Length: 116
Length: 110
Image 1 (cartoon, rainbow over the protein chains, first blue to last red):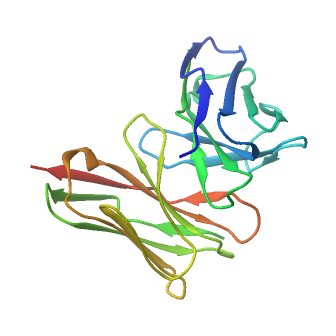
Image 2 (cartoon, each protein chain N blue to C red; image 1 turned 90 degrees about the vertical axis):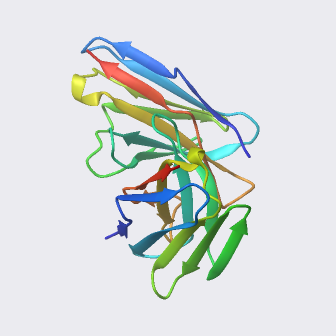
């Protein structure tokens, strides 16, 4: 199947700092990427839909100024958690939809963020 | 609104067959997905159904009935490594975003 990478896989930061997470589709062009957050023992919650070359669409309750999304190319989307707080500690997962195949989203390996 | 229901936990024996059910109520439907997620890892794609019927892929099969808003994932010849969380997700009619159920934790015992 298609491959999606995320970097970093794990990050620890101090409260108040910003953290950037990269999501790359390695062997296909992703016109659309999705960012999810997952708290322990809970399911994935969609945060935003990232479309190449346009503004991201945020889900209700997700602060767009706090979670900045940039999708500058067909293979890269970034999520920046600005002024991180301990409650932002979570597992952040991106997924990408292959522009050629309308069916499946492929998930990246996830980024575990711990804010101290 | 959108509502997806799955059992919270299931336990089955190695070598047996287990069926994980998923019912959904969504505003529009454009496909149902099953993902497997091991603890601390990202989900991996298992199956996709958009038409009624059974899709078989090795030890895994997935069934869909759109009129009933119902799907199940069937796992045969269970192995210990199948112990994981199984997520049911529905794609709405417009856009491509998936709405996930809470997941079913499957424990396979020897």
